[in-house]
Length: 375
Ligand code: NAD
Ligand code: AHE
Ligand code: ZN
Image (cartoon, rainbow, N blue to C red):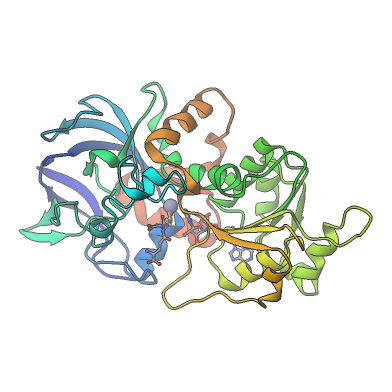
C-alpha cells in the first residue's frame, strides 16, 4: 500500500515527506495505523549522524500510538481494532533476558532491529523498489507501519492517541528511571540534569515516589517554571553558579550531622558525557546512585576517578526506564487516565506530518517540551 512518511534520506538533512510503499504484515507481525507520534531527542540524535547504529534512508520515530488494522498469520495477542503503543523495547516473555526477570532488554529481535529490519531480515518499507530502513523497530513517522507482535502494547481504547503516544518513550523512560531503575524511596534527595521531555518526567516520577528535595539543573532558565510545575523544589543554572557545579550541588544537598552532602539519586537527561560525570560526582558518598538516561554520540566515553566508585557511588543506566513494555505500558496509560500522572501540559506543540521539521527546530531552540505529529 502507499503510505505517507517523513523519510530521513541522509544524515544532517531535514526529513522529506513523501509517499512510500509499505508491504502488509507477515507471520507474527501487525499493521498499525499510526494516529500520533512524539518527536524525541533520540530521533534528532540519529538524524544528526551521531548514532553508531544510524542507517539511511530510514523512517524514524519511536514514540507513537495507533490502531491495529491488520494482523499476519499466527498473531494471537492483538487483533484488528486494538489500540496499541509501539515498543522499541519489545517484550517476548521467552528469551533469556525476559526470563531472567533482571532486565527489560528483551533480546528476541534486537539484532535485526539494530539493522533497520524486521525479524525475518527484510524491510516492509520501500520507494520505487528500493529498501527504506525501519528505525528502532517502530518507524512512527509514517501514517502506517508494520511491527512485530511482541513490539506492541495493547492499551485502554478510551485513551487519547495525541497524549499517550508520549508514553511510547519520554513518559515511561523518565518515570521508569525513578521507579524501576533507581527505586527511589520516600524522603530521598535527587538532582535531575536536563529539564527537557525526559527530565521533566523524571521530576514527576520523583514527585510520585515521594522525594523531598528535587533539584533541577539546566542551562536554559526558561525550564525553571517547567520543573516547578512537576515537583522540582530547587533550580540551578550552571552558567550562573560561578564555580564548579559539583561542589555547589554537594553543598546544596548537605543534610544530617556529618554534613557530607551529595544527592541520594542523580539523573543525566542531557546525553552530555561531562554532565554524566558531574551527575555521578554530585551523588552521595557511600550510597549515591547516578542513572544515565541521555544518549551520547559515537566515540564518546565517560570517565571519573575510580575513587568515586570505591567510596560507594553506583553508576548505572536505563533504557526505556527499565519498563517491560507489554506489561508496564498499559498500566502507565491507566495511571494517566486516572490522573496519577500528567502528560497534557508537556505536549507544547502539535503539527501535521508535513510540518515535522518544525518540531525538530522547536527542540533545537529549546521552545518545546514535546512536539507531537498528528496524522
Ligand atoms: P530535550 O532536548 O527535550 O532536553 C534536553 C535538556 O537538556 C534541555 O532542556 C537542555 O537545555 C538541557 N541541557 C543540555 N545541555 C545541558 C547541560 N550541559 N547542562 C544542563 N542541561 C543541559 O531532550 P529529551 O527528549 O529530554 O532527551 C534527553 C536525552 O535522553 C537525550 O540524550 C535522549 O536521546 C535521551 N533519551 C534516552 C532514553 C533512554 O531510554 N535511555 C529515552 C529517551 C531519550
Ligand atoms: N543506537 C545507539 C544508542 C541509542 C540508545 O541508547 N537508545 C536507547 C533508547 S533512546 C530512546 O529515546 C535504548 O533503548 N537503548 C537500548 C537498545 O537496545 O537500543 C548506539 O549508541 O548504538
Ligand atoms: Zn525516545
